[in-house]
Image 1 (cartoon, rainbow, N blue to C red):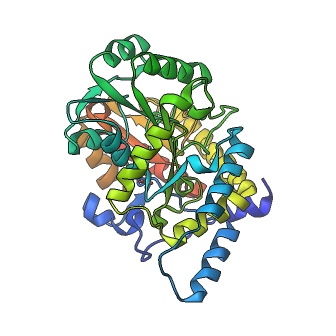
Image 2 (image 1 turned 120 degrees about the vertical axis):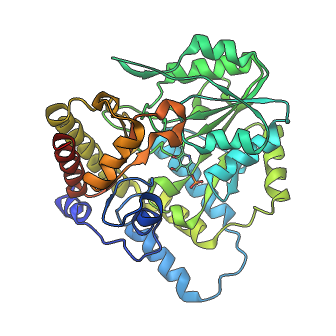
Length: 393
Ligand SMILES: Cc1ncc(COP(=O)(O)O)c(C=O)c1O
């Protein structure tokens, strides 16, 4: 990374007073404002300069009516997927959706019926559970296995569960919160098993651009046979820090699945994109390569710093180093405190805001998630504060 870029990422930017959930809603969520915000999954870095310029230029025009930038954004996204991930997609497979969580709901609504079950691999991002619950679908859990080797899928359990009326599996790839970048072999097994049991896979790949140590994201649609039963959810919002602009894509090669999802989007009147979301995504996919490489490198260094700190100073806090995502999944059970007492220690003694593991399901009891997409100084202070708070208990 160029030194200029490192200096840029190292310099904290005050986000207070910018209508920012992460830094401006601390009091509401944690009961106090004087915390280091290491929770909500967005980044404390400015986006790609060309994205900012494209937004400013469009904003100057002053008319922000209904928009259609489909051809431009689809071409830019297809080129990014090809260039960065070796995946070739036809532009007409790409549907626009306001957000990845919205897409989970649209897919489940369009592709399952009320008596169907939806399978998720727990612990997992909270809205995966909500998708099944709010649509009155049965939820089937396929818990991940955690041992000395880290996190992995339980394929025996998966195969047994897929035959129990499951119609859709929501895959998190890379996985939030455990940080696995699933291997090609693991994903091919998922595709083969789901195809055999006539199950549709909706693969949430919002974190796909953040992979470390040579782990490479295998896009679900690059696997043999995946075009038949798999739908891929993507977004530039996580990769380029654009979450407030609300924009994402659903990519479905299978025409029947795509048309069903498209109909669900139309019914909800969700087909007209946010003009700034569309412009930002297009510019990011066109111009974001160098920026993305630098940010991934920086976050990997933050992760390495955090792992070394934990091993040396806080060995009672468990962690399997994440292979992808900028989210670190930390096991505080070794402290021998209740979940609420750990939360109290983090907030009221260490003065740091981490996500409670319970957002990710009951398996998250005693676990907390720390966001590493922030200047190094925040990671250092957070860990130092936690270390002091643990010692002075
Ligand atoms: C796995 C996963 N999916 C979806 C989202 C949110 O996506 P969106 O803001 O596009 O709804 C997040 C945000 O943290 C996430 O971690």
